[in-house]
Length: 252
Image (cartoon, rainbow, N blue to C red; front, side, top):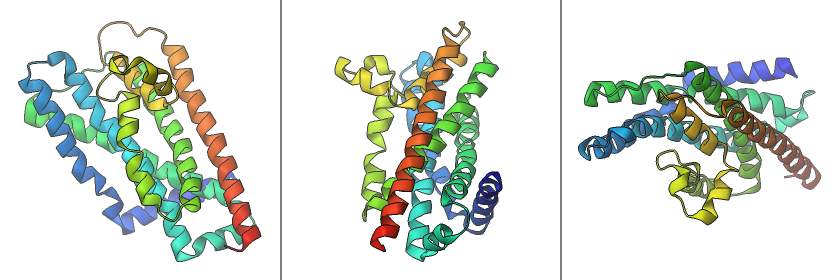
């Protein structure tokens, strides 16, 4: 299974080199960063500069998950190679997870892209006061996103119009996760829903890691991100197994 995972990882990196159009979302994120930074800078809100620098990076991470990783399984299905993967001696799950992991590793690029843009255009660069907490939150977020993307893969196989759901799952998640506006500003009835979105824990913890004040309850918050990631991974593994079994039974 480990060999299949590594094979999927290498395959996806090879495909990205051959088809760099998967990285087109990196061309749209600078516009988001410029809009957010322009608003907070010209509104004289230096307290929100950190939010404006971090939000596009987390938005980019989610974009990679629902766009690139979501399309991954659809392309396999359209080309008819998914059936060949199912017929192999190894379950397709680790191969798909390896390919998704490669996409998630590329999801780190928006972070550097946004911060470089903020420094060049606005002379604003964040200072990471708690690098250990920030790095741990980023690694766990990548893990949680990979598990969430596996759920997307199963959902894409169940729907004929997966692109509609990909678009729908963008802005509601940005709102519930508080990537730009903190969750505390949401209506009271929406706050419990945000606790189920791992990005809400990631965004808040990363913002705290960029401030000079001590990070409170860092351990439990990291566990929350990791726990939601494990839940997503198990759910995605189960749903993908169920969908593939139904496809075999129905000959579809």
